[in-house]
Image (cartoon, rainbow, N blue to C red):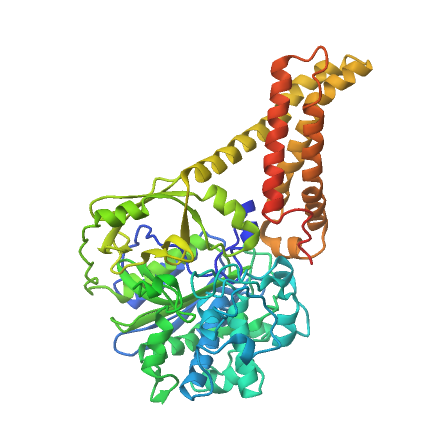
Length: 626
C-alpha cells in the first residue's frame, strides 16, 4: 500500500489503497546508522520538519534479538507518543495472514493450492471465460494471477458499522471479479483475491476467518492486541492527511483479509522472527520450512514457468534495497504506510509503520533499516551477464503495450500511453518508453534479465502460443505492430494538443464574431465554438478527478457532487464530440476562413478520438458510486 497521489492518473488507480509491491529501481542510499542509538536518532530527524506525526518500528537482529520503539506522535491532539506497542494500520501486510492460514490447512491435508475456487467456495461469485481449461485456483488468488480487476471505487468507499461479514463484503459488487486473461499467466494486484482465499478458509473450518487467524497465528506469535476490527482509540495511532493535523476517519475495509489488521511493531516483529525461523517462532511451529519457501516464490505465472524464480509469491514478494534482497510486504491506506521486510540469508528483519502517506519518508526509512541491519555485511554476488543469442534478440525486438493493468478502468489508457520499444545489446535488454530515458537490463540467461545492481533476475522473455510474445515479470507487456503502437499514441497526443489549444483559440476568435449579430454571423460563430465546447467538456474530466485530492475514495466512490459531475461529463462527452463534428463538417459558411474551418474540423476529430477512448476505456456515463 502506498501514499495517495494527487494526480488524475493516481486517482484512477487509487494507488494509495491496499497497494501492491513497488516497481523496480533504487534511489540514492542514505548513510548507514552505526548503532541502534544512531538509527533512533535518524528516525527522529526524518520526522522533523515533515508532516508525518509518528512512526512505530521494530528490528530483528542476526543474533535473534528484538528491539521495538517509536518516535513522534501517535495522536497529535492529545500529544500521545508513538511507541513500539502502539497499534497501526498495516494495510496489505494483512494479506500474509491469509496466506499463512491457507498453507496451514494445506499442511494438514484439508486444502490444496491447486483446488478450484468454484468448488471450495461456491457462494463466491466470479466470471472466468477459461474456467473449463484454466480454472481459478487457490494459488491464483494469493499470487494475484486470477486476472481479476481490483476493487471498484464503490467497494473501496464502502465503510459501514457494524462491519460486514466476509461473505457480505464479497457479495457487495462481484462484477469486478472477471478474469481478463487466462488465470495463471500474468500477475495483476487484486485486493479481492486474498479475501476469496480467506472465504475458502471459512468454508473449510466452518469458522469466521478472523477467529481462525487469531487462534492459529496471532496467539502462537504472542500478538495479543492485533485485531482485524476497530481498536480502542487510546491504543491506536490516528491517521492523518498530508497537513499532519487533519485525521482520516477509520476505514472499515469491505474485505478485511485484504488489509484491515491493526497491530503494533513489536507484534509484527514476531511475524518476521517466524519467517526468518523458516516457520518456527521460539520453539512453536507455525509453518513448515517448505511452506515458507512456497510463500516466497511465485509459481503460477508464465514467467515462473519460464524459470523466473523471484517476484510476488503467496502474499510475499522480493525487492532489492541497497543491493540486498528484501522479502516481505508493504501496506498503505489513507494516512498510513507500513513495511514488513526480512533478509533470510542475513537473518535480519524489520517492521515500521507511519501515520501519514508520505512515500518519500517511507522509502527513506526503509533504506535506513536495511543499511543499519547490513552494516559490514558483504552484498550478494551479482550474476555475470551472458550474451543474448541473435535469434532471441530478433524474435523479441519490437514494440510492446502494457498487458496486465491492475484496474480495468485504466487499461486502455495504459495501452495507449505506456507503449515501449524493446531492443537488445550484446548482453542487455533495452526497454524504452516514449516519455522516458529507458532501462537496460542485464542477461542472466538468454531469456532471463536483471537490473544493473540486482542480484537476481526479475524479467523473463516468453513466446507463448496462446498469449503471444511477452516481456513479463511483476508487470507484463505484449508485443504489438509498430503501426498500432505509434499510430494510437500519435493520434492521442495530437488529439490532446488540439483539445488543449481549442479553448484558447476560441477565446481569441469568438469575440470578433460576436460583433456580427446576423444569423449568418451566429453560424460562423458555431464553427469553432462547438468543437471548443466539446474540448472543454473532455478536458474537465481529468481536472475534476484531480479535485478529489486525498479524500478521493469517498468523493469518487460515493454519490457526491464530484462523482455526479463525473457521470454527467463522461456521459455528455461523446455526444458533444459528435455534435461538434456535425457542425464543423457542414458546408463552410461564407466569411469563415478556410484555415479556421480546417482547424475546427481537426479539433472535432480530436474530440471524437478522445471520446472514443473514454468509451472504449469504460468511462462513458460512469457511475463510480455503483
